[in-house]
Length: 403
Ligand code: PMP
Image (cartoon, rainbow, N blue to C red; front, side, top):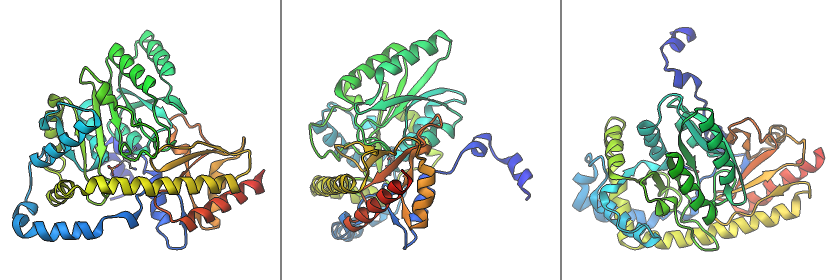
C-alpha cells in the first residue's frame, strides 16, 4: 500500500499524534555505549526478584488456573480491598472497592480518562511543561491543550483562575485539567497544600474534571506527605490515577484508578473493549506481595535509595555546572529540571552530548506552547553513581565550552 493510500485510511488523531520522545530516547539509551540520564525508569537493582520468584512458585500450584485465566474487568476484588486499606492509611477514608479500578499502569488510567471524558476539540488544561504521556493521551482523542505555568509550588493556580475567567468571558468551555501533583514529570516540583485547596475551589466554580496523575506519590524523601486532590474533593470531580510501577515494578504494568463509582462503571465498559481485563498473573503476585507486607518494605528501600541518588546528583551538579545554570531540588520522585544559561539551546547541547555518547532529555517537548528550548530533564533513578558523575561532568563541560 503506498503512503498516500495508507494516510487516507488512518484516523485523523493517529495522523497528528507524535511518537513519544522519551520512548525514542529510551530506545537510544539502550545502546550499550550510551551513558544516559534520559529515561525515568526505576532502579533495576531494587527489583524484588527473589520475593517475586518465591511468591510465584507458591501461588502457581494452588491458583495456577485462575492466574492463567481472564479475570474481572474491574480487577480482582481482594486486590481492590487491599488497595482500599492502603488508601485509608493515606487519608482517603471510607472508600468502597467499587470505587477502584485496576489498570495496566497509570498510563492506561489516563487513557481511560480520555476515552470516557474527552470529545474532539474539548479544552484540557495542563501544566506547562507536563508529562508527555498525558499530552499524548489527550491529543489522541482530539483534545485541545492549554498550558498553565508552574513554579516551585507547582501549578500556578492564580494564573489558572484568571485564565478560566478569561476563557469563560470568550465563551470557551474548559472540560478538564490534567496534572501531576507530586514530584512532577518533568520538573520534579510538588503542588503546595494551599494551591491544592485553591485548585479544588476553582474546579468546583468552573465545573471541570481533574485528572490527578500521581505515580510518584509514595516516593517522598523528606517533609510531610500532602493530601491528594482526591482527599480534598467533595464533589467526585477528581479522578485519581496511581501506579505500582515505581514502587513494585513497571514490567507487571499495574496501577489503579479511584473515582466516583458511576465513572468507574463507564471506565469498565471502555476497558472491556480495550483489553478485557488487567493481567491476572500480575494481580495475583502483587496481592500476595502486599499481604506479606513486602510492598511497604520495598517503598522504604526505594525512598532511601533514590534520596541518596538525588543527593549525589545534586552534589555533582554543584561541582561541575557553571553558575549560569539553575535547577530545583526535588523532595521526591525521579527528576531534576535544569535551565541552561540564557540563549543556550538544549537541542544543540543534546546533539553534542550524543556525539560523546551521553544522553539526557531535551525538555522542550514537555512544553505545550513550544517554549522551554533551554531546558533539560535529568533522571537519577536508573543510572548508577558512576554514570551519574560522568554524565553530569560531560554536560558541565559542554555547557562551559558554549558559554
Ligand atoms: N504518569 C507519569 C507522570 C509518569 O511519569 C509515568 C511514567 N513515566 C506514567 C504516568 C506512566 O506510568 P505507568 O507505568 O504506571 O503506566
